[in-house]
Amino acid sequence: ATMPGVRRSFFGCASDSDRTVLVAGGHNEEKCALTSAMVYDVSEDKWTFLPDMARERDECKAVFHAGRFHVIGGYATEEQGQFSKTAESFDVSTWEWGPLTEDFLDDTGDTVSPPTCVAGGDLYACWGGDVMMFLNDKWQKVGQIPADVYNVT
Image (tube, rainbow, N blue to C red; front, side, top):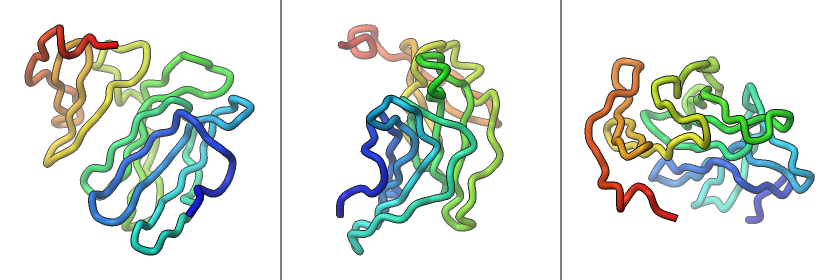
C-alpha cells in the first residue's frame, strides 16, 4: 500500500522486528517539518495514522525498543538545522505518546544531527567515535570505534 498523507522526506523509521514498520516526522514538499506518525502492518498491507507527536521533527532518528517507538532529535521548520536534544516515545500497547524527554541527548555533545541508535536488549548509539549505551537514564561510553570506520562519507 502507498504511504498515505503528504509526501514526506527525511523521516524517522523503525520496525518492531515482527510485522510493523513505524514512520514519524520528516518534512513535506514545502520543507515544513511534520508532527505526524504512522504504522504499516506488513501482513495486512495497511497504513494507520498514530496520534501526532508533541513537536515537529525533521531529520529525526527512530528506533524500536522495549515495546516503544522512540523518535529522537530532529528540528522544527523555524529551527532549520538546529537539532533538538529531545525525544518522545510511542507505547504500542497503550497507543499513546509518552511525555517529551527534554534532555535525551544532553550527554552526547552532538550539536548537529542526532546519533543513529540501535536496539538489542539495550539501547545503543554511536557518535564521535564512541559507542554509547543508555543506562539508568544516562548515556554512558562503553566502547570506541576506529576513526577509519566512524568517519565515513
